[in-house]
Image (cartoon, rainbow, N blue to C red; front, side, top):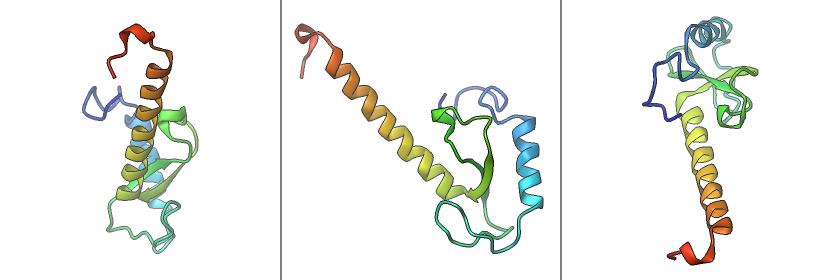
Length: 102
């Protein structure tokens, strides 16, 4: 579901998600490396609860770690773009020849 649709709870970012993020922030060691970019993370930076297996691939309730917000959102956008491209390829591959306009 796109991030702008539905409530926080409907998108899987409800109380449980927020409580886990607070727990991860409380356990953050300043300077600990981001698992995506290996740059240090500091408490004053924008940090997200990142899923090791992306939510788009079924990792909504799996293990999570902290990552820079920009790293997490960039990775999510890149995955979404790849998945969208794959869906388009499948549609073109299985569409009847007579209905193809390209």
